[in-house]
Image 1 (tube, rainbow, N blue to C red):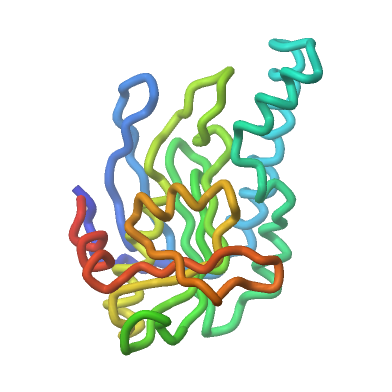
Image 2 (tube, rainbow, N blue to C red; image 1 turned 180 degrees about the horizontal axis):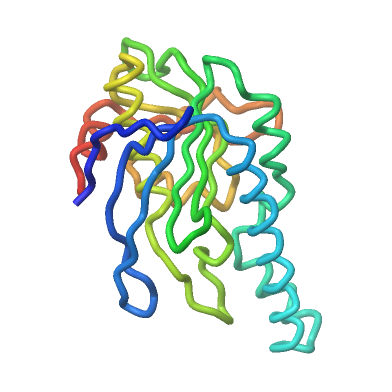
Length: 220
């Protein structure tokens, strides 16, 4: 079970702990760290990009046909592969931004950056806006290898929601503009697509209603 007690670690805060179930069925402890950290952002860049390269080589070795290679790549969520977490950290270090990193097995498994406050498009009150959220490439569905950990996007967003209510005084709920391949995930979270709120890249706007945000916070 998650422990929401906050423990200060230097300038960072360990805000939640729990256990993940690895694909091997072993239980692995995790922690979620809140706070701005160039070190964590650099780790996301270095470790995740290294794994992307390893995966691409694995696809080439497993499937010599280029058409099949492209089909495998198309099935993986790679829309955020160009994200530079270090640059995002440098550009998003002021008080209206909050950073969250999920660590397990000695490496970053997921990362999330939120902006606050943001006016809700559905209900009265201020919520937060998810600027970026992603899980490590080894935690994504892929035809040629199993996903190591599941539901990490939900776990880190839950932690951000709990933090926003308890520490920032925001009401339950959050919003974001979704990458196309991530829309199914946000729909499963019970987020609603709001017409007319697309961004400059025509990405769809989603918002989590308050009632479902409370459900997310209370889940274990």
